[in-house]
Length: 320
Length: 297
Image (cartoon, rainbow over all chains, first blue to last red; front, side, top):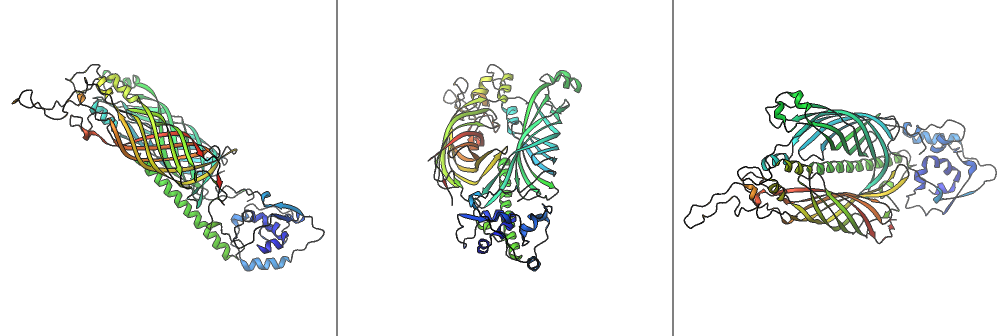
């Protein structure tokens, strides 16, 4: 740190790579930073000593390698020292023009720790019905989504449903002597579009930071439901459903290739139920279906899943 | 509800694991740089996650007028308004109480069932009349809880790259209370001894056996209840002292919402009550006092 103060020119060269660290000093042994820093603009981008920043961001006209930081081999101390000696000492010529720069002028913009553009998300998930007090549908499903940009994606999903009756189904039958008219869902599939307008981070127990985002989804798809006959001597029938959906979910970033997703999705469709006068149609499924009662359904589901991202890593295209 | 709580625990566990992973990465990075010549060493890994942070809740009172509604109620939606008063001892720990006055609305299920029931009481059938069915459903005029609250997560978010707001997640546990009410008139609920034999009208007469008709029994689903309270929610800070408060609350206590025979013993008794989760969604506007915030170092 003291050497840093002595050699302003070297600092500017290093600053391109060490901006984050230098803008947020945390060396408790070091003296308090000066209220102002004086730099030499003529040395901007120079980095003649071949330091980390100078080597990549130097102003010698060479093309900047954005991916160098991710792909560079591990540092070798002896090789670095040899390279430093070969480059020779820093030579300053001419009169230095000093420009005051305070710590407040240094803006630290932390890069997003996770990039999604041009990556594919494979998301297996489980879910359960939230708004049906007669039948609970548990689902297992998956979605494959491709991110066109960091905030826009297109994907396809599929779900398999497993139905189970909830307590009120039995209660109504036993207490009110009525058999509820219900359908169970079998499967569904959809083409979805995702938009990610909200991005944030939070601290867990004031120790570590976790980044997350909120994505909104809209899609169109199809599915199948099956009538649960009130009287088992009559066969049930199936319905093919057009199922648009809307929803929102939160995504928590764990690693560069793994995220956790929690969300709510509303599948909207018109389902056809067994009519109250089903006995009139007997075993004639076509007539029973033709005279079924259509109802608009909002099947709101809670979904929990993990996402695997391919490729498993990514490269930044902007400066740190 | 149990599955939702389990899912929350899974997510929480994964996030805690994420924290560990990142801490390990930082340590590994520090070790790597140290071994490569010590040019890039940093104590950031040992530091707090956020410095110069606004203490948006620590040492402040929180008063929240709120609206609350049941989620996926079976027989009656409970909808009402109330207030929450909470004191934040520190940045993570607080205690408080909530009280809500509410009314009950029949669910669509109840409306569908009632339309198909017989209009008049007929003790010759096992099915209830419309009045027998509806009058034994209970409502919850008052409910609330006293709780302690933990706020382990706080952060900030950017919406549409323009609006930057702070938020925190909190979890609550405590004691729930509720006042339940049902109005079954005497001409409907007129069985003096549900499920029990009664002595004959004259001495020496054979005892009168139970009528085995639960439709004329008192619903036994009124009165005070104490139970368990669990909650989880988020503050979205609109300013330094106003926040949008969104919460999912579970008031769990003994109840028999239909007021009917649950265990199929042909009588409504206290045995028909069971421990039930009453799940609510709440939305409110939190006002923090004092209105000025402090910052960490």
